[in-house]
Image (cartoon, rainbow, N blue to C red; front, side):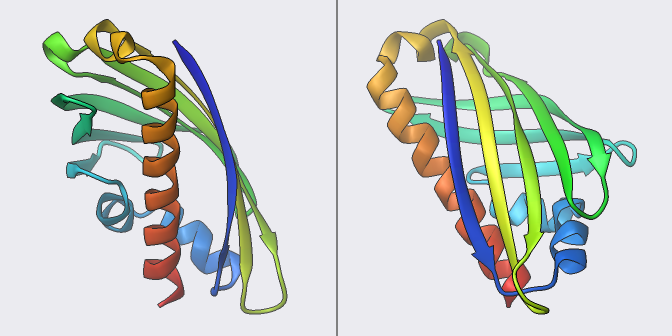
Length: 149
């Protein structure tokens, strides 16, 4: 089952600061809902453990996150894949673009695609779509609060 989620967040910080935060595992870990750990393996690769609850299914996903198409400090693609054991798998990516909005603000736009399989996919597209949108919204608003603070 494939999903597409798009959105934008205005962050009260200059583009350079937002870019640095998008590449900072500590900030990302705090912003990712359910993230238990996020370890940097290289400048473009991280390993993550995330606990998610989608409807009646709660699962721990272990996965890899890779940063691609880097165009500092304006855009990149973040791709990830996680396995949640019997619950199934999730994989996807997001194109993230930063645009200056005056000297002290940035508009972060994202277009994400995700694919889920296994037991999770049996929950129905509406539930998965609404949960995915909620999680993406939580991530970007938390990220915005942390960076703009």
